[in-house]
Image 1 (cartoon, rainbow, N blue to C red):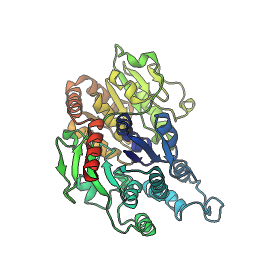
Image 2 (cartoon, helix red, strand yellow; image 1 turned 60 degrees about the horizontal axis):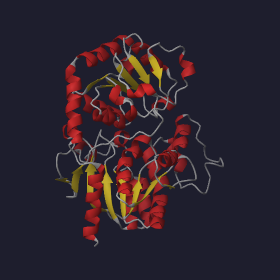
Image 3 (tube, helix red, strand yellow; image 1 turned 180 degrees about the horizontal axis):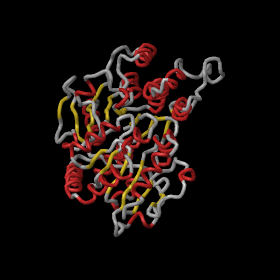
Image 4 (cartoon, rainbow, N blue to C red; image 1 turned 120 degrees about the vertical axis):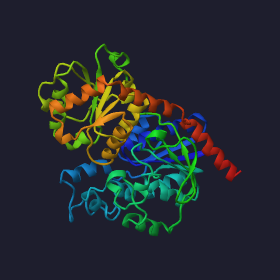
Length: 415
């Protein structure tokens, strides 16, 4: 079978799909991943064939330009570029990434799927471009939740129009979607959904078994979250658990690009007074601006969390959905300092399940930080709860099992 996988251009948006793509490839299916911007490089390095659905510009870089107040304005050559869809720079300037991804990616995703001869499309819940491509191509679809902070099963997501800033869902009645549907001539038609996938552990809001969607009856299937953060040659220390506690510190891939490094420096120096080893997983911050780092800090640069988190006693992070899920997979307690996007939703789930604690970044001075770290390292209940969730995840169907089930559903419908 020829399967098209469609995802928005972000580490936390596309990488959760990779284990499912690998499962399809290992089963002998022909695969193609439709994305754009930096994820074309990351996807290719992950061993995947990639279709760049918007080669005209790097939408991620353009969002960074807009965030820095450097986006092109009316009258400039870039702003008036006829190869760009109408409204491109307006959406970038308004810092609406998911609307921009939808505008930029939909046409190219449809073209890639048609040229590839796709018989099934797999798209993520936060990717309207994939959803509309499924309708335009007229082929069966599988919708995959790529976050563990929220799901389209959650009433607070489906029942409110103000959730975009947290989840990234672009509503069906948004001007971008309405205009594209009219342009494509697909009206209000819905995809031919086989199922929707919830990758969360049951006690984190997920499923222990199939469940019909309350809105349209489409079945929801559970699936095990398998972490993938990229590949790299490992340093020897990453394979060995040290004698003293090892703490992973990461602020993700986006936050460092928007920061002067001051918050990171404060965290490092706060942790520097503890008898622990700190692994700084950061390849974006200019560390030369932070001054001399504490002696217990090891700078890892780009080092995928899944390669060393099993040797850690704690992870301190910004509230990324993938970071939370990877920590749960390895049964590692967490301290979350939530920033924007869906980070507060991550923090809430961590605290509610008692697999970690939350600290407001504005209050993350040395004493508060150290007190919570000590609590997480010394109170066994946090590690115990994390181990329970890890066991739940291990008992869920693997991506390979889910992929096989989806393909069998397609062939049953269309023998």
